Image (cartoon, rainbow, N blue to C red; front, side):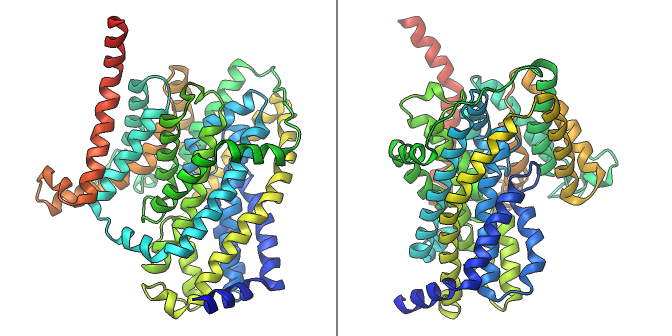
Length: 497
């Protein structure tokens, strides 16, 4: 083991690999910070270049671009309310609220330092406990994934907005949208209205862009186009980030650990991790009333979970060849092109390369710190642009991002329709974030529900047969009961007092 680690480290600390990491970090920050362009897209565009690289620099380029692009996606999220990933939708409203208060650098600084720490902790856990995490992941069946998805959706309802009823309504709208497409059980089209483009369902990237970015453009144009955002300087960004770590170190550690474990579960990943950790952050916070109004604690928890889960997603990818998310799916393809086949024995057969991936991940997260600080300082110039100029630019980037998903104008129509829907929802105080999570997780929950029903021959008690599934099921149902009866209990206590 020590010899393998030394060999892996030596293979990373070469001029070629370090230069690749450096350039990939710049590339990831640039592409990820463009509204509408995602980390997955930035990695996909990089794949042709990896054909001409050796295995270590090729994979280093992939992991570095992933880490930096995911953080960079928080920049348009905080400044323009365009989340870079579905996971960052968990805290995009919190970060954007900080921007509206003139404290965009606080939100982005918190996002950066927690992303770096969460990423490093995730890689260290991956290095030390990859086989143990893999053994946990392999125990998850359709029952566990069903309850885990339900728990993630319930967490979104618990923290999104003041009204549980309105949050639940938003979630149901998202789940309804997720049913569009081919029925998993019968293969029959559902709610497609004869449109061939809807057979694969509603793509969540145009949906996310429309529901966050376009609705924000419409609201700004119709309400406060003339107002200017006053930027409050925080002085030394590095001192602020050190103070943030000292203040929220327990939150960062807790979310990094939980995010890494959830990231190691194929199909769960950062989306569920960010929402659950944000929910836990609000639940255990000493000042939960500050959440939703621009508070760094929620950004710290969800940001750390997001990036730690990215590292955890490589566990099933390396050990089972099962991608934890779309980015690791591309990573598996690059590995196989270089002659490395993911398997339970990959640490014995290709240990040098596997640990080289881990070291490249650590360097990528560390180099992201100075690059990210420069990006944050530069990003404030966006807020200096008059809104009458900025809003058309956001709309243009939104159209570009929606079109780039599959190069069809139909994605633009999806963005426009759901953007109008989101504008109507927010005009009636219905939060958007639960709907996005419903679109992302709806098909996952439906698939695992149907698989479990087939396994148990329709017996609902079969969802509690396995110990982990039973634990997750009890926790989810307990959260449902809490959400249903807590308003009644508060009202009863109010009358009693």
